[in-house]
Amino acid sequence: MNDPVNIGTLLSGTLNDTLTVSLPLFRPELALSATIVLLLLCRMLPVLRLLDSALVALGGAAFALWYAWVDLQALPPLAEAAASAGGRVEIFSGLLVFDSFTAYLRCILAGFLVLYIVFTKVSGIPDREDGADFYSLVLGATLGMCLMASANHLLMVFMAVEMASVPSYALAGILKGRRAASEAAIKYAVYGAGAAGIMLYGISLLAGVLGTCHLPSMANELARVVQAGPPGGSVMVLTLGGLMLAVGLAFKLSAVPFHFWCPDVFEGAAAEVGAFLSVASKAAAVALLIRVAYALGMPAGEAAAGIVADLAPVRHFSVAVIALMAAVTCTLGNLAAYGQTNMKRLLAYSTIAHAGYLMMGVAAAIALAGPKPAAAATAVTAVAFYLGTYLFMNLAAFAIVAFLRNRLRSEEIASYAGLVRTSPGIVVATTVVLVSLIGLPPLAGFVAKFLVFSSLVEAISAGVDRQLMLLLLVVGGLNTVISLFYYLRVLKVMTFDAPPEDRAGEAFPLVSLPGAVVTALAVPVLVLGVFWSGLYAAAQLAGAFAS
Image (cartoon, rainbow, N blue to C red; front, side, top):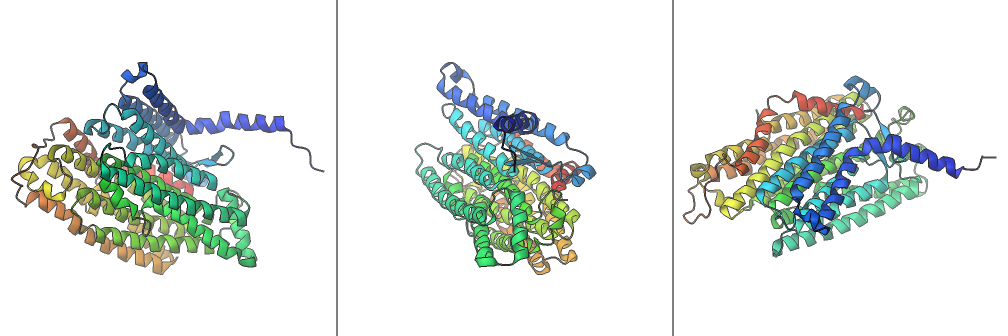
């Protein structure tokens, strides 16, 4: 006869685990939460309204970055981290997981947040009246993105995605009295609600068949289903549930065919909001895709070794879905960017294309996970490095758009004509950023794409999903060539076209506060193309969880 559960012992153990294990590994999120509360108090209490909300948000983001950096530095050396699955520790009763991948993504998100707050303070959006609301939404969405990177339970996956999405809907419409911003927010919210409903239904199907929402436990049950064969159509239900779950992830990634919201939202919303959605949201979505696909196809734990072979069909299905979406997403993003006349729409399609490149690395990692775990860790490292460089590239691109909007009162590419004659510094910075987005040496984008393509070559040489990996390599190479034309078209307008006679605004000198922000974002793009070993070492720690 089983012993009855002692409620006191259970509560005591849970409380002790929360205070001694979970909360110390949750400090970056706690810093963000405390800052959100302080910002709301700044909005409510007359005395605290004297505080600058941007400085309050910057202080909270700096604390979150500090804690994230301390956690990353405290990880064991690379060899030990690989042996212990990145120092994996489940926290809050298995809802979240802390490992090297979580620590790295927290650094990326918190570091981006610090740069983003400085950028928005200098650009002038938001104004002082709306600052507390704006930064509360930004920090709240970032908190959800941190949870996406560490989710270990399907209910936490859904909650984290919604925590990141709902504030983003409001951010898209933050510009008061602007019809385009209101339409962008409505479109974003409608698409998001539909994707969330489909994803939640998929989660219910998976949980109903497998009897659990805990990702490692789901992998064990999946192995059991694969071993037993397809009883009563359960495999079909699991396949449908997996595809529905992929809808929610594809929406956050703006992957085809769930990308329709992206160009309209980016054009209608402020460039500052577009920067946030294109970098932070993309990084968190890629992290969640890796987390879910890897957990279901290559689970961690002592019992994992016995079921790796059984989960081969699950990994193959995941690779097929991700690879096909990556190829279509990359191609459509680059082709659709051709006809754009608005710079924000062009960058929106560029964001879609880069989501495809990132998904190629994820597909290679999942394909290699079974036969060559060390190579899979290298593929995850490539994706993590790509995210680190993408932070600077895309944030710099949107910063240039925002500051030129303030000067020229326009976001149309045609309004940039002849800028080299009056503002050569900003043209040089734009050249560095756009050429890096293409993926040409000696800039950071080249190293990032080279590492992702190398992981595809490794998968081809290993003989796993060879045709899919070869397709991705060919598509990635062709799309890199295709992207040359629309990025260089912007530079052609800036340098060769005659400036309009009725141009409003004045020259944009780099020796200014906005120029300093652009320079601070563009210089790492150049430096990381040559001295990239430091970021790669940190990315290797992120990939250690996949070993």
